[in-house]
Image (cartoon, rainbow, N blue to C red):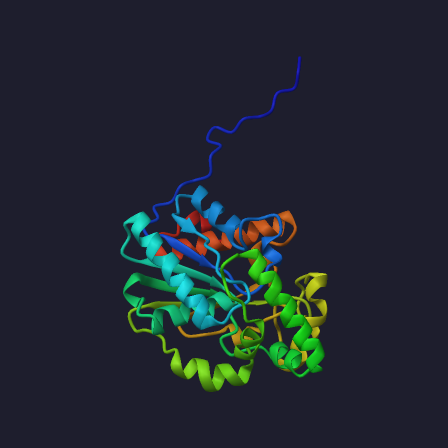
Amino acid sequence: MPVLSKLAHFPQPPLYPFQMPVMLMHGMGLMGTIGRKGMMDSIALFLRLHGCKAFAPNVAPYNHTEARALAWRAHLLRILQETGADKVHLMAHSLGGLDARYLVSNLDMAAHVAQITTIATPHHGSSLATLFLKQPKILTRTFTHFLDLTGKQSLPGTPSDAKKVLLQLTPEYMKTRFNPKVIDHPDVQYRSISSRAGKNTSTHISPLLFTQNRLLFFAEGENDGLVSVKSAHWSGNTETINADHLTHICIAPKAIKNNMLDKYLIWALEAEGVLPDSLRAA
């Protein structure tokens, strides 16, 4: 007699009572787009399996916050029109978190945003940006030109200015220019998630982030390979998780990736105030 697969009584993933759409906002770069439709596309699809109207649009991967925020604004208005919702939850990774803050505070979108959740966002800049910009000009010019070229090819019709992005990510710029001008809106909830891995932790870090992790540790302490815990903390509720910067966009072994996806689901449910007991210990 052939061996039959065991069947579950109810095999589909559980649906949750989501009300708000979620707009996932990606950071700088293209690594997470290899073999995908976008850096956070897999996260959006996972959330949709559980009943969340999640969207992961794409904007220029190597452009400055002011320009990216305008593109995010157009995407947000489309989501509101498509879903009929009044407000959305912005879940923003890395540079996307700065875009989200600018979008709400400087582009008059606070009325349409209930909460901003930032994940490993360099709210206070990154010493790695300063270190890179101190390298010989021929190196910085060649590298940023390459980023601009790949950025324009990846999303045709969008401009690219990698040098300006890196300048904006320096701690000095964030302290003296960005943060004083981008003030939290009182009608929007803020939550920041920091992350740590590698040096001084028991969490594995991707070999692609090994050197950056060490350099940043000696400048800012525990970090995820690109953003320190200290820099990722912002106003409102804060939380620190054990994961590297690539894990946030699901570049990780299957078990670690699944754990990260569950975290996004939990954060989305917590923003709605409907987190079930079955997920509280996840």
